[in-house]
Length: 245
Image (cartoon, rainbow, N blue to C red):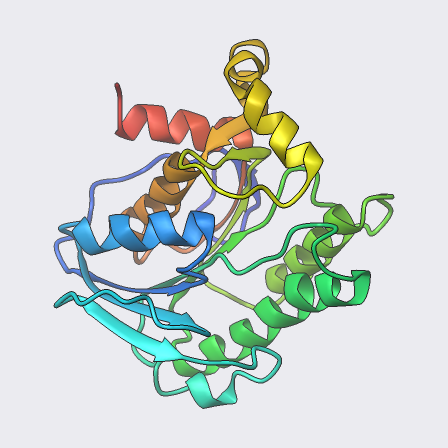
């Protein structure tokens, strides 16, 4: 594996840096972002967590800086908050069917691309970790809107010039904590998850494990310049190696 801008599957995690990481999390009120946010606050190698979202988290912590931002179609006002950052976890998203197709594309493509634009201007050396999805199709040929839009976002991010870019492509994300599922499909998947996990282990991942993997990459890969695509199997392998049961 070369060190600079090579798309690869899998990731070898190095020793954490001595300097504490300054981390931004977008979407900390969501399922994966919420776990990432809490894990980052407890992580000894994280010195500052800047949580950017539309509503307050209701948490006080010496590491935490909250920034409220309503319109992610224009992130210009975030330039100062994004200055001097080491890494970003972009976990903002929407469920297919929960919003219109136009809204889904706006949230999935336009929001991360606009955010990335401002981040590149404020912290050109920062790493960008994007919560994509299994089946993301940069060619735009997929019949699934979710796959097309995630692939479109990935393609633009790959061309954005980030020194470090991590594209996380989980399959089914198990919520862990009970919640109101957005559709019948999600309710069904939750009910059969124990069996599905045994039969198809590389098609599922726990939300908390995914979140920990995203934070661990941001912390341990600080200063490493490369582009990595992490499929569901890669994420599971990384979690098992860093957090063995």
